[in-house]
Image (cartoon, rainbow, N blue to C red; front, side):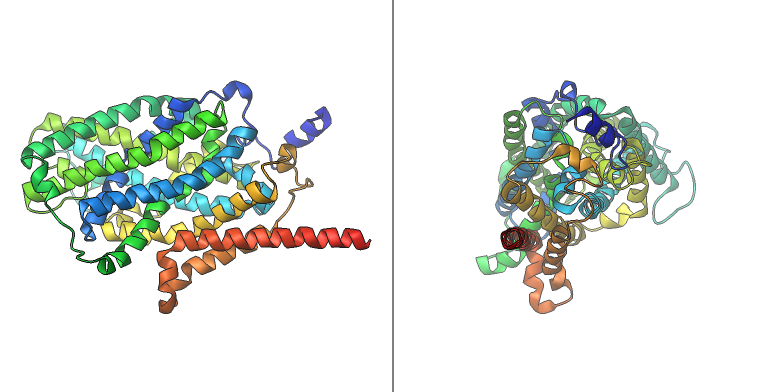
Length: 480
């Protein structure tokens, strides 16, 4: 890039230091860092709740784990495809999206992704707050009733614990990505060891694996199983559909394509399945021990009578939730909001805005019912994010063949300036196809496959539109 062009980029309203290509000196993430990132993000309470929720929907433990493994293997493909430009060019997700949508049009996918992340941030913050609440109660039995009254069905001290955990997230974000990397590195093995101890306890209380594995699902035939399996599989993909878009936010710090790819392939499907299996064992054991399946580990640990066990367990939940919340649900929307208003919103301000919107979305209601969590929240938004993934992958791999003009991504009058209406139209078509089943009962099957439908329709629509545009331009040039 010439000095003149560099000055033009740095003075552009589309540029700020947080969105700039990552300097080579900051590309320090290796295979272990990417593996640890996924291990930390997968070792979270919502992963545990996935398996529990599937069992609650009637699946056997084998069916639940097979569904989770298949879903995470499928979603690994768009994750790796969208990771490539981050490492190659050092750019975050919203800047990468400017190639397919235009410098202004990129705000559509960025803000769609950001709003989902805000909802996730709120969910994780509520879980972390609940863990803190139980942790404080284990240290001080009078904590729960320390402040009299009730607000929204919860004690005032529950809201205080929620806000304390919320503030912890904001503090880490204000310290930057390097602190995040350090937190992920030690949180991953710590959470795994502590969960393994909880499994050991559950097996002891349930008298081994035999009684747990003997529990069967309620689906006698494949015909009965299929209507639950399809939306469940789509929901599993929806679980990481967010990260399948914004992995460039992390891979921009990678040393090489090989290291980021190996770290992700090794860690994501295996960790999700293993941790979900732990959730299956613990939840199934709780049904034997307490007479009912307890799908929320915070509630389960709260039944323990030894204060020190409760304290250590809840500290583990806090660490797990903090590490995944910041990595999965703050980094991307912070960049997305900065992309929409680069002169006013920095990465830190974007993180604060994410936290505030997360509260407004009332996560305590989203988590009130496991079936709502899987079949409404995860399934619902997966169609929209699948539609964005289809456009991004078609654009980068088929239309541009992995070649981007980086400086033009930051210029209003560059080759990506304004809106690429073909990208916008393809995304909206994908969303329409994925969500039309909500209002047209005869097309409900499309909603059950919402991520696949959204991805397929937008991918094909965008590729055909771009090819048509190039053909028209070539014909016009020839005739001229």
